[in-house]
Structures are given as C-alpha cells and as structure tokens.
Image 1 (cartoon, one colour):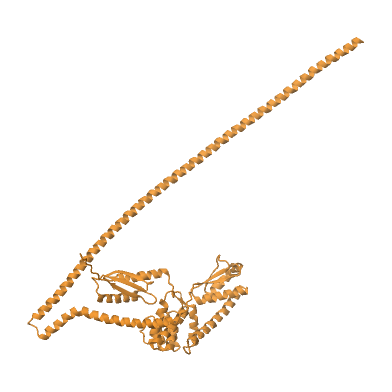
Image 2 (tube, helix red, strand yellow):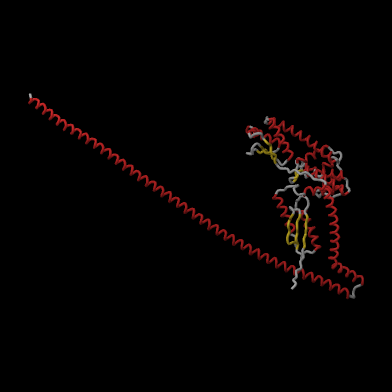
Amino acid sequence: MLNEILLGGGIATVSGVVGFFISKKITAANFEIYLEQARAKAKAIENESETLLERARLKSKEIELEAKKAFDSAKARAKADLHQREDELIRKEQKFERYAQEEERKLQLERKTLEAQKLNLERNEKSLASLKKRYEQKIDEALHVIEHSAGMTQEEAKNLLLRNVEEKARGDIAHIVRRYESEAKEEAEKRANYILAQATSRYAGEFAAERLTNLVQLENDELKGRIIGKEGRNIKALETLMGVDIIIDDTPNAIVVSSFNLYRRAIATKTLQLLIEDGRIQPARIEEIYKKVSEEFESKILQEGETIVAELEIGVMHPELMKLIGRLRYRASYGQNALAHTLEVAHLAGLMAAEMGGDVTLAKRAGLLHDIGKALTHDVDGNHVDLGAEICRRYNEDAIVINAIYAHHGQQEIESVECGAVCAADALSAARPGARREVLESFLKRVTEIEDIASAHQGVKQAYAINAGREVRVIVNATLINDDESVLLAKEIASEIEERVQYPGEIKVNVIRESRAVEFAK
C-alpha cells in the first residue's frame, strides 16, 4: 500500500517535473517566436527609415539643384539687365555729347552771324553819316556857286536858291506839321475820351458767357437707358431730329447736349427736360414734344424782340426784324453773346450820339440792327454784313442803319454822326476785357504775325505785341529812322496789319525812337 502510494507520488513528481520542463520548453519556443517577430518588425522599420532618409536626401538634392538653377538664372538676368543699362547709359552719354557739340556749333555760328551783322550795321551807319555829310556839303557848294554865278538871271538864281533852301527846311516844316498834327490829335483824343467816358459811365452791359454744351439733370441713372432706347433708337431719333450731339457718359445723374448752334441746343435741352418729366420716351413722342417746343421758341423769340424794341423806344419795326433780334440771343461771336453785344452797342451808340448832337433814336436803332445778319448765317449762305443790309433794305430801314451795317466792318465810309457812334460802340463792346474769348492757338498765331509784320520793316530793332495783342510797340534805330520817318513807319505798319491780320476791335501801333548822347566829365 505504501509502495503504491510512493510509486504514485513518484509518478506524480516525475510527471510534474516533466510537465514543468515541457511548459518551460514551450514558453521558450514562444519567446523565440516573439523575439523573431520583433526583430523582423525592427528590421522593417529600419529599412523604411533608411528609405525615407534616402528619399529626403534625394529631395534635398533636387531642391538644392532648383535653387541653384534659380540663382544662376536670376544672376544671368541681372547681368543682362546691367549690361543693357550700361549700354543705354553709354548711348545717352554719346547722344548728349553730340547734342552739346551741335549746340556749341550753332552758338558759334550765331555768334559769327551776329558779329557780321553788327559789323555790317556799323559800316552802314558810317556810310549813312558820310552820305549825309556829303549831301550837306553839296548843298552848301551849290548855294555858294549860285551866289557867285554870273550866267544866271536874278529870277533863275532866286528860284534855284529857294529850291535848295526848301530842301534844308523840310525838316523844320515837317516838325511844325507834326506839332500841329499832334496838338489836333490830343484835342480830338480828349474829346473822344470824354464821350466814351460819359457813355461807359452811364451804361453797364450784362455779359453771359456762352458754352458749347448744356447739362440736363436726371433723377437717376436708370433714365439714361430709357433715353438711349432699345438698340439706341431713341438717342438716334433725338440727334437726327434736333441736330445736336447727346453725350451719355459716367457723369452721375446728368447727360450733355452739345452743338455749336445755341438755338438748336436750347430747343434740344428743353425737349429733353419735357420728355424726362413726361416719362414716355419713344420716337413718336420725341417728334411731338420737339414740334411743340419749336413752336414755343418761335413765339418766344418774337415776344423777346418786341420787348427789346419797346424798351429801347426806337419806334415801329417789322415783325420779321423783331423775330431776328430775339433769335440773336442764341448766337455768339468769339464767345460773346450776340444779343448782349447788340444791346450794349445800341445803348453806347445812343449815349455817344447824345453827346455829339446826333439823333439818339436813330443811333440806337442802327446799333440794334448792325449785326442783325448774324441771326441768318446758320440758315443762309453769305456773310452777316451783306445779309443784314439786304434784310434791312427789304423792310425799308433808314439809309443810316444800312450805312452802319457796312461801316462797322469797314466796307463803307462813315456818313453820319449816328453811324460813327455805332462803329465806336461796336469796337468798344468787342474790345473790352472779358467780352470775347478766343482759342489760344489762334491768339498766339495772330500776336506772332503782328510782331513779324512790324519787325520786317527797315530800321526796326525790336517789336513787341502787348495788351493782349491790341497794341504793338515798335522800337527803331535812331540813327536810321528820324522823327518824320517814324510817323510814316507807324502808318505803314498799321496799314499792313489791316490788310494781313484778322482781329476784333483795333490795334494801336506805337513807334518809339530813342536817341542818346553819352559823355563823361573828368
């Protein structure tokens, strides 16, 4: 029994030991498996890290190569730009050097020319002085010979002597004539200035500057599309019917009506305003409103002409003439409103005629009608002088009125005090500062032409156009031009300016002769 127990215990012990060793062996085998798996994973991670590292190295090399390429490209462009700038600078330096050399050559040439002219002028002055001295010697010799001659009768010697004495006395005679002429001019100028002062101090005319465009205000910018219409039919109808340009741009709440004809522009502006108020903008409505506005304007200009004639108190006038007077409000000359200018001339002419003892009513009537032809120049071919004279003859206006129409542009001589007053008033109204505007280019061209005309005459040193081109100051050489010749030179320059230059008003020619004698006290 005991042996069995011992045997069973031994077997159990042996079984436990064997089981322990088997379990340990199995555990060791599992551990090896886990260890191998861990090693495999570590190897895979190591390989992946090496792959990533290699890729990073390759990427850095690519970035480095691209950066190097970009640097090389930028460096090349900078070098090329630098070379280009250097070349451009060299070309500019060469061009400047050539320009400087050319200017220096021109200056040297001009200097030589001026020196030659100066030398030639000195020679001419010396030659002129020598000729003048020889001329006086010859006259003295002739007088001496005549005094001691025996082969002439007393009457012949007397006549010859008088002729030679007359030659020497011409300067004194011219001086006396010039003195009396100057006194007469001074007296006439004082009287004329008094009349102009009286007229201008008693009348101040209104002047409204006219432009070539009118602005039509809109309630909102949506109306611009309605004014244009589908495919532009409304704006085409407006421009074709009224003869104006309608400008629709980015100006907020406004459109521009443009035309050189003030009358058409005024009608178009009023038509657009009525169409905008009405809201129905389409071709048939446009034509209807335009016809209505045109009739209203015709009636309005007749009423305005009647009012002007009544206010001036110049008597009865034909309705057609009064309608043309009203139409002058929509005409302009050099930027000056024709009606404002006409009324100004009428008032000034009446005041001048009153001072000179003329017919005030007739002077006003002539002043009012002197530019009446300007109301027809847009519709009828011809200049406003001939058109105005023709219309006044048709309606049996006075001969003085017709004479004033022609005379204020120099086509006839002034035949009456009233006509002279109209011409003076017209020049005064047109020439006063601010009355008229001119294009800068035409103004500069006219001033240059005036100076060139004056400078072209023999003996003129310098010529300057001053006072906005209404006066030319001519400085002459005192050794070549004497006092008598200065008067003739002024008249010649004035006549040439009248023939060659178109200008409003009048131009004063002022010839200045200065003679200086210099000596030193030691």
